[in-house]
Image 1 (cartoon, rainbow, N blue to C red):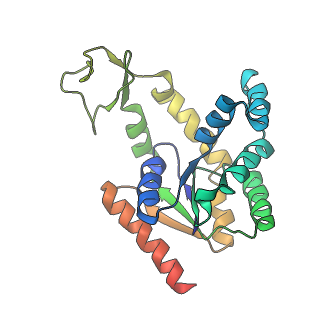
Image 2: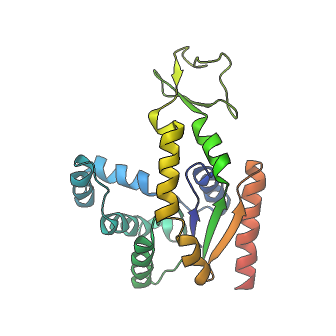
Length: 219
């Protein structure tokens, strides 16, 4: 079973990807993790990607898709995989589809975790990080015992620039322009299933599993 998880920053793709990976015993694949692993290991693709990263520009779609293609050919992906937040645009989706075709594979289901913009901003802007040990908190969902101080090392916790409201609005704008069109793209292919991303973590996981199982029984 080959899945794609879509959703805006803060929608909960990472958490749900981890839950689904454990439930179905297939790996969760994040392009960010692949990118860092290739750069760290100094693979040919990693060196190519680093050239662009060092210039402060986005890694081209073809390089990212090549990394994903290489990853899904590994042994642990033989029974399936979960692509977490990939593809990011229509071009990546089209290249991914043609690449999978050469491997006699295809995407079985695209799950879109849908959360309204106001809630996304609330989730993302509430994140806090310890300056010393890097522990993560959230002012609403996971606050420290003592306000402004890390539970683990008593150092100051702070809000990263990435988690400030103006930055979040910009990130959501990019998502809406580049990634949101994938919803219609996969609806036309009969693969897309929208899931309400508001609610308890287990409740959302169960909704996704139900959608996947229903799709399998109908196929």
